[in-house]
Every structure is written in C-alpha cells, then in structure tokens.
Image (cartoon, rainbow, N blue to C red):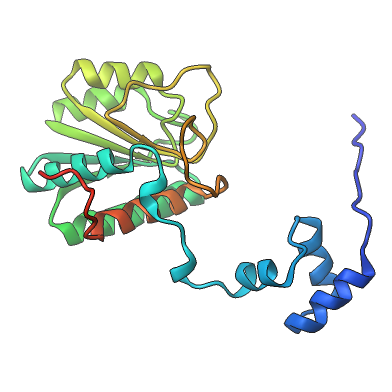
Length: 218
C-alpha cells in the first residue's frame, strides 16, 4: 500500500518573523504556519493563551439541558453512572467528571468497558446492569454519539442519558438522549470543533460551576 505525502511549502520569511516576535525557533514557527497559524496574535494565543480566552461553554448545543439534568440528579440524590472509555482520553474524562460530581455531592459510580471483551462505546449489558443498580442517569464521556440502540434501551428502562463526546456522527442519526454535548453535532455554535473528550468534560465542569443567568432552574 503506497502513501502519498503532501508536504507544505516552507515560508522562511514569515517563519523568521514569527520566530523573532515570539522567541521561538524558525522550525517551530514553520510548524505553526503549517497548521494555519500565520499571524503573531494567533500564535501568541495558541502558545501562551490563558483561561480567560476560553469560549463560553454554553455555546455548545444542549449544554444548558445537560447542566439542568445533572444538577437535578444531584439534588434529588439520584444514582449516576459515568460511562467512560478505556483509552487515555476516556480515563481522564471519567476521572475529571468523577471529581466534579464528588465536589457537587452526587451519588455516582464509574464504568469503563473492557477493551478486549466489550469494545468501544456503550453496550447493552452495561445498560442492563445500570438498571439493576437503580441508576437514573448515565453520563457518557468520550463516547456515546453513535450509541443509538443503547440509548433507546436506556430510555425504555427509565434511565436518562447525557452524552458528552467529541467524535463525529457516523451512522446518519444521533441517539435520542436527554442531552448531547458534542461540538460536531449539527447546529452546535461552539466555534472550536477539535476538543478532546476530556476537553468537552472540562467545558461541562465549567458550566456546572458557573452561576449563569440563563440556566434552567431546578
């Protein structure tokens, strides 16, 4: 199998300018240019940005609904299941949301599927186990955007599902979840589409702890 490599043309003059202005090597400057960062201000924000420059998490579609349902579950002492993934992104996403729910005083458990036995994403067996454990809310992290059948089953069992994911829709339809927080879904106005799964969970965490005027009241 042959690979066709597309090599960007170097731009020594622009690379030298960015290199001098930011105090980085010309090679590093060229890497930034290759990725479409061609202005000093853009490079400055990319390399040395701070949290104040972050986009509002409520620009994400369904973020308000996700925050409402999670706060409702915490307030009503409903059992929550954090449904993660087995890779680094999924594990860190699970850990971050667990810390958040712990600080909120929520009752939760975590679940990460076995890579070799259960594969990727939600599975029917785990949803059935959640029902047996009296789980009322499943929050997926780094997965779920393509789990149409599994979410349908959860709904039939009376379990709400809040999906947080960063993958694209691959099967032509999205699950009928209570809320879906994924920058790749249609009508999502969040301007940056390339967050990792843990980045989406960070946005959820920020939204949960912000006192925002247009949040739905519990």
